[in-house]
Image (cartoon, rainbow, N blue to C red; front, top):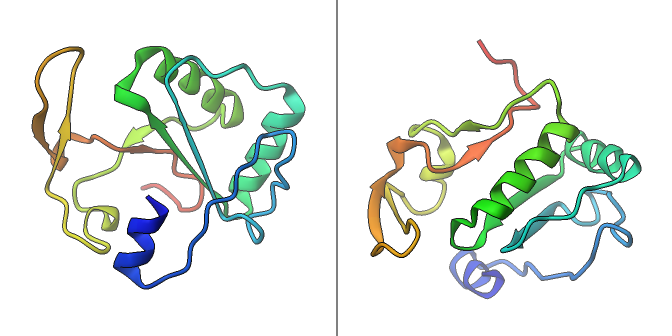
Length: 138
């Protein structure tokens, strides 16, 4: 992903391996935390929850990707993000959001459910979700 992004954008992004016990939680040092998995994620202790919340409030971005849409991973992440932001909810990103057109226009995504073949789904179905923490919702 980093190599592709660098070649397409002419940037020099890099991958930095870390874990929550070693992570600085400073978005000026590591602005994007990419988290992917297959199995349920472990429950974070209260100190880690507070550090992740502050990292996000300070402008950090946490991109979470469930390999093959694994329900075990999804439900465990949903539990932890609800602990991090108990007053916010994950919600679909609207189809007109800039994320769908920031470099390449994205009108559909290929998804797979269980063992069914890959299917193309329109982005107006709300395939990506976010928690809005930095702007006022009206």
